[in-house]
Amino acid sequence: PAASENQNFCFKDELDAFKLCLSPNKEVILEHYLAGWSGLVKFLNRLGNVFGFISKDASSKIQILRNFLNGESGSEYFTVQSMVKYELENKLVDLKKAGSHPESGCRTLLRLHRALRWLELFLERLRTSQEDGKTSAMCAESYNESLAQFHPWVVRKAAGLAFCMLPGRLAFFEVMNVGTPDQVVAMLGEALPVVTEVYQITQELYAKHDLLDIP
Ligand code: 1PZ
Image (cartoon, rainbow, N blue to C red; front, side, top):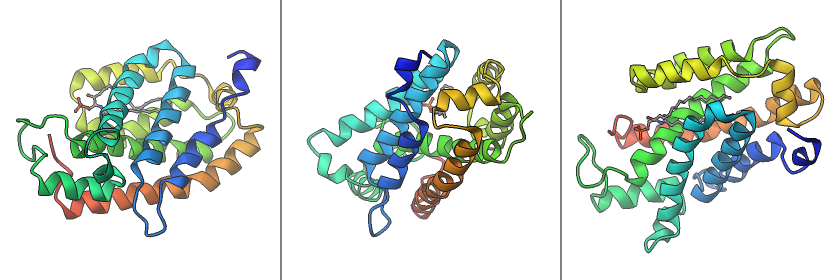
């Protein structure tokens, strides 16, 4: 990316949105959660067009959730906790089979939530990688340990091909636009615990309500 384009992007800002998304009583504020995801999509778009099918899917899910947030019942969607309560109490979720609510907030967020686990694994590998580390391998390993199990063969195949197009570790760091490799590593060390916490809180909430397998 051109230097001028670089000035308004910094990967740290995107991850910081996840810091904002925990309320004092540890609920996940949807607006900030989506802001975090929007930032990640922005980053993905900077990596090139081959990731377009991934960023399109993420964007459309962000949009579905934003529409709920800006809709008539928007206040019910303030946190992920209130969304789950509202949608379940009002029977707005297809729990077993896609039916009259194929795009509920709960099922849409679950897709992003699963991807957050991939992000956590990938960024941890990136953080602890050596100079000669391969981003494509780190990405593929993280994917295989997390998201892949939820994707059909064609998607796994397409994702695998896209990963091969990832830039090397140093070039990847440059796209992040955080600073020197040491600064990137330090930033990841600070930001990752927050991503982990957001993931765990959501995971426990979904497990408690038996929502981890909704179609
Ligand atoms: C840095 C390199 C980026 C690699 C991104 C790794 C994730 C690969 C995900 C491949 C998704 C392919 C397209 C769409 C799949 C959808 O079928 C699924 C399930 O949704 P459904 O069909 O049930 O509605 N969508 C997802 O699993 C959500 C994927 C979101 C991925 C967001 C990636 C953000 C990247 C951040 C970069 C730091």
